[in-house]
Image (tube, one colour):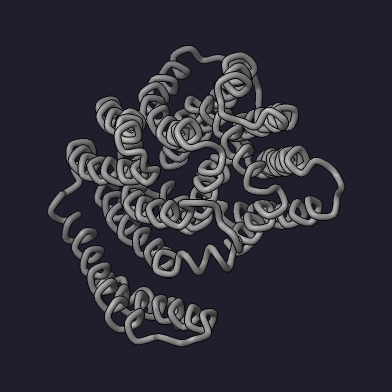
Length: 482
């Protein structure tokens, strides 16, 4: 998190607001073509975890080989789309500075290559997670972080077009990391041994699951990148830079929750596959609640001190950045509860109407945002729409899981919503009246440090005594004693 925030600051200052905005909008076009890869990634993770839960080694190797074949096909499709429609859209439709078009195309081509490596590597990464080798995942992540620090250093010291250099160096990191993951899997997992084998029926099963996931992923990608394009069309490249910063902070903060859920998700699927339905549902309750608390603990100090944080971090943040950051953090607080529910739906395998319904609501974000921007011309409306749609989607997911895996809605309200709402309201009241109201030190930096420390301490106390139940408190105490 620290390295992510530091590198973002140096990259923004080194590239400048305009070039940073260029990289953000051009990269989003490439990601836009990855909707099928996102769907297939979910299917790969689910089926690998399911086979491990069934303890079926032969089927596991079959799943790995089939998913790898499909990902090679996806990479070819993305390459064709990116070099035709994508290239045309970047050069003739986006609102980009004319004197930087050479650098824009350089960035675009390296973004395409980086994305293609990511597609091909999905089955290897999914296998590491499904096998729950979280230490390996952590080592690779640390390795990646060290290289990102090296990128920052090279950007500052090398006398070359900074935008082109940044695109190339990110591609180099992606290439090295993917090779490491592939070699680790080949050495430690016998099921990752690749041999071309085409099973028509099994490929159909995987593609059918991915097909329904595809609709939901098209909606999610369209929402994220479509809104970025809307900001470009309505307000220009500066707000793309603001959006990029907000999304970077969201991604860095969200890392805590995504890594936590990454460790839990295989267990939810494996226990479902092994017929341990009650244990699987219990994990969904616990991980939904704890995901929110982890996110709340980290997001609150940023939300309540956003202007100072951005000033301290970026010195001169682009227009609208602070509001974008606050709204994006509120949004991922809602999403943190949804994550385990999504895994629960995928574990059932029966996702057709789930994906159609949720995907349809998510897909509404872009047209609703477009209409509101035409009327009110306020960039914040994009995030208001996303937050509203996400709240509706969260409620819909709960009702779907009642049908798919017999999740008890009243227990979910008691185990998740009740402690989450209580902790949130008590925190907001206490912080506003005691911490923010009473701490008034002239030195802004010391005032910020005291407020952050007080915020974290208050959150820990509320989560421990109100947020978690007696059994969970006992577990925490035993863990600390050990």
